[in-house]
Amino acid sequence: MALRRVDLGHGIGLRTAHFGRFLAERPPVAWVEGISENFMAAGGRPLAVLEKVRRDVPVALHGVSLGVGSVEPIPERYLDDLERLVRRIEPALVTDHLCWGRHRGRYLHDLLPLPCTEEALAHVAARVRQVQDRLGRQILLENPSTYVAYREADMPEWEFLAEVARRADCGILLDVNNVHVSAHNLGFDPLDYLDGIPAARVGQLHLAGHADRGRYLLDTHDAPVAGAVWALYGEALRRLGRVPTLVEWDDRIPPLEVVVAESRKAAAIEEELLRPAAVAPAAGPREAVAP
Amino acid sequence: MTLAESQALLHALLEGGPAADPERLEACFAGTPELPAAERVGIYAGMFLSRQVDALRASFPRLAALLGEERFEALCGDYLAAHPSEHHDIGRLGRRLPAFLRLHPDPGRPELPDLAELERARDEVFFEAEAAPAPREALAALPPEAFAAARLRMVPALRLLALAHDAAAAWRGPEGDGSPPARAGPVALAVWRTGFEVVHGPLDADEGAALASALAGEPLAAVCAAFEGRDDPGGAAASALASWLAEGWIAAVEPPPGAGA
Image (cartoon, rainbow over all chains, first blue to last red; front, side, top):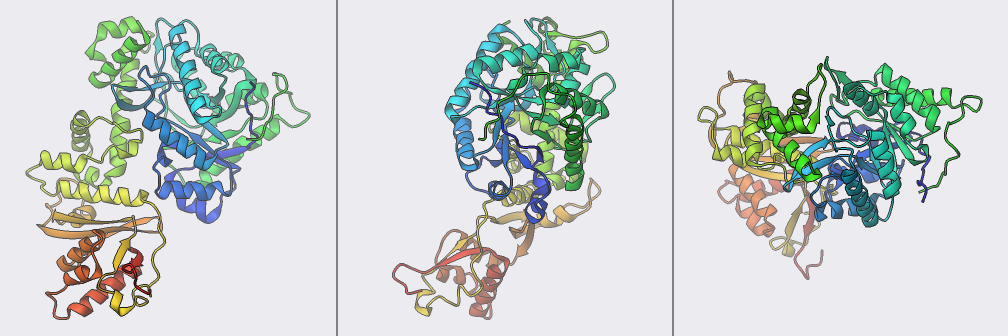
């Protein structure tokens, strides 16, 4: 089955700090992404805000606590809450991360790295299928920022992610900033990552800021998108074609117009690179299916 | 090393730091001369704590400011060791912090549990469900014979706190150790939401008791009985109820079954 590609355009994260302005002003963004766990309570102010925004623009739900690679079972409560939220919001996309994050019944609230081994591959693919079966729809998995490598890795992360997507028949949320951060930290060529990702599986791109901590880069989401990441975004667009792109900003959140301006910058880059006379996508034709 | 073993190891290293098991760390993870494996794992260990401390600081900003960075982080470390996260929403991490502070009091700062209670209530109220407030004439529309047995349904975004210290003063007071401890003595505080802004304010003891009755779903007769000690009990009750309606605390006035309202 092909990826159910949705043509969303350019969006930004819906964060609590901007709730009021989002409702009052209807900012000029084509879609928004909410952190799934922030809206899972059955009632509550955040869910009411999300439903109101949803009436105006498409919404993607982006999870941070699924921990799909954790060896312990995915809690039924989590799946129940996610399923209820998805049915209620009918999001354009449902996404989470290629990581693990639970141990002994506790949530570690981090996107912890997985060893790129055959054992992990089979485990993650099975878990993704479990989630998709539960939700009755495809999800997209995002590459995390990584700071350490496992010695016993059988393959690079891009091959691992591509194979998970193939086996589980899921999509890929390609975080361009994370590719840049991981490439810097682990010493690989970010273009190898882009070249290794099957274009037809990519349903969304992420952009965000990071911090230079001297000997490594830290994925902080607290700053404008770095120049090198904008350049890599261009390279991604040349390979993937037009893909829904979202700017994340989660810490030291600036006024809404600053985040919107970053999104507009992404749109301008896409427009410049993908004009009809510009470079055609390297990959073959892509299926475009409405949700 | 199996996937389960590698996750157990990394979890142990997150909680204990890279020094918790240096031999297995080196066997499992690869580093570079510029950034050895132990330091790389240390990045995760640092983020593991800092992300949770940041979440607690977001829920308890005044407590964090009053304690200062070092003491607040130490408190968070102790609290998280006792109450690791069991919920997928990191925003709920601090639900037990007020109780933890009561069990582990700071003799020089006895108001800390109450300040944490106030901040937890403010956090909860911000995220509470929306509910349309009852119109200001809702009580006046009640048939006189139905008044005593009618009940108030309060909006979800409302909390009544019965505290042992003036946490509101601690909340607005100067930061750091130099600020004087908050005044002791029973204090009733209401916490509610206006639009996207959470506000709180003190209540007289009798209005606090009346609000407690209303929140418990008791009939209006019991709510108004809280003002019996006043010179003009009826006037005081009417004034309080009018202010509750004006503040949007009342979602509905529910007449007793069979009443004609």
